[in-house]
Length: 308
Image 1 (tube, helix red, strand yellow):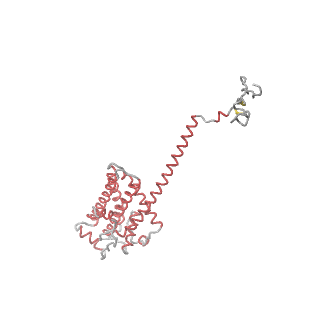
Image 2 (cartoon, helix red, strand yellow):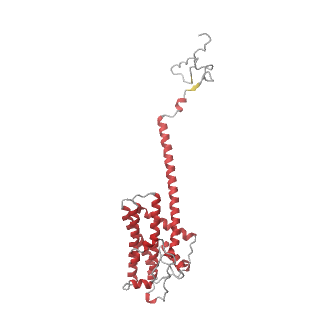
Image 3 (spheres, one colour):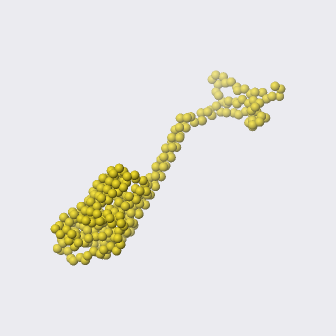
């Protein structure tokens, strides 16, 4: 048709001729004067452009890599948040144990000998260790039985309750072992409680010949050591939260073992410096705590440890 823009045909490439450009066909409908037409009369498309477009395989591989990176970031965030949760829980339990230490009721030597009149020092120590091991075993079994459907908030609360109760039982045991072997630390209730807390943290008896062990204040180093000890206990007690009553059996066995282990270390240390009962000077009765322990902790103490 006269006046019409002729079609521009694609130039045929001869065999063996390198393909440099492909010229798009422009007709009347797609010409510059047509509605919606391109501003360019001809568009040059490099022949190697198609190779730059990712294939389905490459797209899938990239998606998998991005998905893996997202999962890795999620895991890292979870570990970081979990670590922060454990540190926060350990710090909270540390403060509760420090607060509870002067509130733990301790029987003095006269009271213990009246309750067990036919036992010598080692037999009496055996009796106290067995009672405390039974008490912490009961606590572990109770927490394991409660963890039927563990969820993160409940698990943290259960671990906190268990470690706090076990610490109170073992602090009471350590204090009474010091009475049995004639190694009562000097000072008032608070000072002795700090000495027993240091003994529990370091898993050894209080050395009365070293004033530094008796005057140990709750400074940064002591708190760090106590927090580390509590964190180790929390990690060891994690299997107690296995559901279906398996955690109950695990908790009972592990708590009994750990209590006996700590007690034997402290007793071995105290026995090397023991003072015979006949050679002991007259000691005043131990003062009673002014404030009672929390109900759950008090109930744990009034179990086998309190009876025996």
